[in-house]
Structures are given as structure tokens and as C-alpha cells.
Amino acid sequence: MASMKSALLFLLQSIVAGLAVAFIVVLIRPELLPSLRSLEAGGPASYAAAVDASAPSVVTVVTRRLVSGEPDPSGRSRFRIDNSFGSAVMIDPEGFLVTNWHVVVDAAEIQVELGDGGFVPAEVVGVDAETDLALLKIDVQSVPAIRLGNSRQLRIGDVVLAIGNPYGLTRSVTQGIVSATGRAALDLVTFEDFIQTDAAINAGNSGGALVNSNGELVGINTAVLTQDMATEGIGFAIPVDLVRGVVEELKKHGRVIRGYLGLLPDDLTDGQREQIGLENDRGILVIEVYEDGPAEVAGLRVNDIILSINGDPVFQERQALLIAASTKPGDEIEVLAWRDGEQFRTTVTATERPGLAP
Image 1 (cartoon, rainbow, N blue to C red):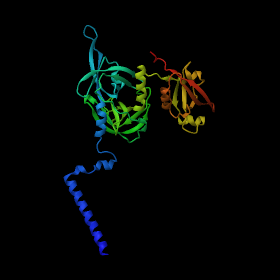
Image 2 (cartoon, helix red, strand yellow):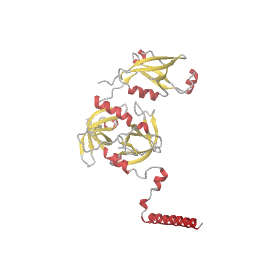
Image 3 (tube, helix red, strand yellow):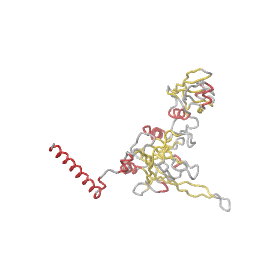
Image 4 (cartoon, rainbow, N blue to C red):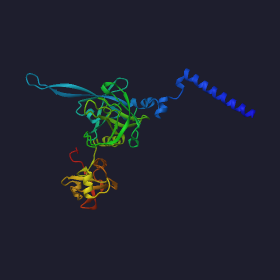
């Protein structure tokens, strides 16, 4: 019994001594303890490592445009030079930079400001207005290439950082979360599959990096919703998985060569589904078939309902547009459709989107 009391006394003395030491540490060296914010949030208290890994790859893009002004008293045209700022991300150690198409469109001159404050000219390798992306090239190897992440792995609630040059403030960083993925129907570009974030995106951030907590590129910042003065915290980025494919095409061809199916789809309403007897959310409505196009040749008609493409169920118009964007001329697309209460299959052979060939 005496030995048990001694053991308990020793244990209590050890606990008291340990608490005393911890108390002294809190008073003298609080930085040695884990951050309370880290414990509460379940993540790091600082994203400095992510910024250090990615910010050096983000540069300022300065464009000059010749803009027509008011004519002089004699009626002759006047012109002025308009300077504007944007951002770009080094994605390749060979000097390739990704930015937004709207940052460089109609630019007479493009300069890139490096981290040391120096400027170098940039060449436009290619542009893709349908995704709002442009590929630039500079003859500098001092800018490190950013690590590319995987936007398909993003989850709503993931922490992201927006890095860019708003209002000329170089390499500004804002923090937010992924608010949504797959945003579309915004009428910003033809092919929309945006990451939505509440990280602040301002003028000059366009073309900058959206990175994850590891400093990996997951998107290219492109737009912010500005319906009224009260709107805030709604920004959009192009997912890096889409950027990869566009960049590859721009490197090869200077443009993106896409397949063309020759039809216009639309989402089905609940009333339309009920009327035709579809029991689930699958299916999109064909509202236009273009004359002599691949869809017409394959036998598709207006009011047909496309149920699947290449074996994958189709639920939204956006999904079909993205599938079409990923095809190449000559690709054969297997379509399962519904007409007059019956299913049927057909093969659509994609051609190149008209009007885009040089």
C-alpha cells in the first residue's frame, strides 16, 4: 500500500512539474508552441511556403495599344497610346508564359516585368479566345516554372491563393477557398468550366496564378463577377487541366484545333423530361442541327435527345460542349439518342470548327 502511495505521489509531482515547465515556455517562448489557429482550422497557420514556391513564377504583363481618340478641329484622327497591366505565369523552363487572351488582345507591344524590375519583350505564340487563354514566350531563363497541380482533385472548401499584380502591385497574394467547380453559363467565353473562388481578384490579376496550399498551379485567374457595387468574393479561374490541353495545342499550331459536331444542344427542363417520359436527369435536347454538318450527316435531327456520348451519360449542355471541344477533326463520336420514344445509336465524325482554320 505504501509503495502504491509513493508511486501516485511521484506521478502527481511529475505532472505538476510538467505543467510548470509548459507555463514557463508559454511565457518566455510562445512561438515554440503549435499555433492555435492551425489547430482550429486543421491546416497550416501560414501559407508562406506555398507563396515562396509559386510567386516567383508570376510576372507582370504590360501592354501598349494604339487607341483612337477624338478628332482634332480639322477633322483628322487622333490616336493615343494606352498602357494596361495584367499577369502571367511561367509554366515551362523554356520561357513559355500563360496569360489571358483579353490581357494581350490587340496589343501593339507586350513587355514582361521580371522580379528584378527589368523588362523584356514577349512574343505571342498563340491565342485561344474561346477559353480566354494566350501563350507568350520570353528569352529569359531566370524566371522559374511553376509546378502544375491537378484541378480535377479540387474540392469545395479547399484553400487557394490568388497571386497576381492588381493595380500594378506586383506579386500580391490573396487567400480564399474553392467556392465551386465546373461553373458555366456565365457568357464569358465559349467553353466554360470555371473554378469559383472568394480569393480577391482585381484589375491586373487577370492571367495570374490560382495555387493550392502546396503552391501548385490549379487555375489561371480570369474574371470577377461585378453585377453591382455590392458584389464581392466571386472570382473565376480557368482550371489547369484545361490550360494544359490549350497550351499543348498553341505550342504545336499557334491555335487550338477543335472538332465540330454541327449541332446546338440545350438543357432539358423538368417539364420536358416528364412529357417524354425520361425517368432520370440524363439527356440534353438538340435545338439546332447545322446544314451539311457532321450531326446532320449522321442522321441527328432537331428535338432529338442525346443520352450519352462515347458511352458516358450526358446530363448538361456544358458537358456536351466540353466533349466537343476535346475532339479533333476525324474523331468518331458514338452517340446514343432518343427519338419518338425509342433509343437509337449513330456515329458522328467530327470536322474542324468552321471559320477557325487559317
